Image (cartoon, rainbow, N blue to C red; front, side, top):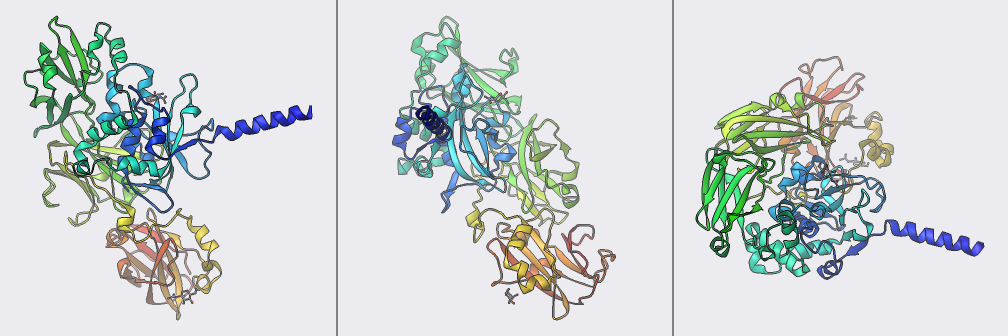
Length: 591
Ligand SMILES: *[C@@H]1O[C@H](CO)[C@@H](O)[C@H](O)[C@H]1NC(C)=O
Ligand SMILES: *[C@@H]1O[C@H](CO)[C@@H](O)[C@H](O)[C@H]1NC(C)=O
């Protein structure tokens, strides 16, 4: 009996150890041998290729760094929380898993066409089973600790542990760098081709005739892969309508009696609207239509043979924001996105729910709509105040609220929107890339910060843990911890030196652009906490505070200012965002 018990225990132990031990793939060869997603319509390898292109850097702890604008919590590219209830992936303590690749999410439209290709053109479950999962920390959502690829288990409502792999950063780097240096220069426009090369290297089988023939019973097998090389792209005319650019391989043109393109939203598969139907006579060209641009527009190609039987190929859906993720608004937990609706330029604001007083802080902020990125800030076509944007009810990100505004400016190449803090035309806090420009706004933390600290500590922990608690400074500050400055990674402390009231600012090192954001901010010194904001005894601008080199901590830079006000009971200091007296972001406890 004892032996059986020991055996049972061993088996149980092996089982539970195996439950969350995921095989790690370190190079292309291992990926190839893993037999993961190696045939159409699987899209897991394409997801991995796409993700590798998004990685900008690998830090010294082997974490993958993406653009600072990127945030899976906001639902970018269809990322959403994965709870790992069944323990398929290793358990996490303070990070969370986010999964991408469910192509039915509207936001997944922002994934490139090579990821969505088979999804559009087949109707078997395999087309939407693969996922890529990352582990992130809420405070630095552009840093990925771990990356996994996995696939759904059709029987169970979770992932299949035997088809789940961890991806070593070395493999990401291998995929990221093109095989051929010549290609590297043209990388931007070539991701599609490069993904094709990558798939070839893994020996991905792209022949999807089985799926085509299941959809169209009559399609003969000779049609396998005939769609290779077709390009259909929807862009914008100068008047906010859809412009179709197409390229159809000459041999397909030759073997086809008639080529028709429907431009319509995906749901309206049987549209009979003549305005949305176009016959193509040339193998390539541009066509300006009168169809208003809207998210989800899709060009559907119909190739008619001599019997008049059409075969349909579904082109890439138009993404309402042109596959551009929202841009960070400097110094705030908020971001801005340009998108199109009914051919008009629209602005979307993502406000983190924790930024609950945003309507006070951004009370005078406005979004300007510009016809061109070269136009001066005062040269807007139209504008709207941020606080007047309408809240979107249906959006389901747990951490953000979304507000939108539709302007009367027709979308066109070069259109840009900007968020300005106030009536001062120099107060730009965010600007989008211009519509259809190929450049991306890429912000890499190490490029704008001198140091990238680790996990963001909670303020009270920092001070209670450190020498400040016990050191003389703590007593100089009347044993008060610093007061957080609302919505910013900064805090304020009142202390005394030589009998005078002094202010100390703690600025988190990740808050690199604090001097821009706090350009007009000031600290007021008050004899009493009852004094009105305008009744300060003296004040100093935050950017004029002196940096204390030696006493900076790992995560904070410290700046201080000594006033002429004699310290006495009741003395208080306040941090105000700008010249406007009602924007108090922090108040210390009275001395
Ligand atoms: C994929 O997303 C759709 C739409 O949000 C949802 O209904 C479906 O359950 C998701 N599928 C899986 C397997 O998570
Ligand atoms: C820095 O901290 C040390 C010890 O806590 C203290 O003696 C010193 O005066 C501080 N320096 C400044 C410039 O505040």
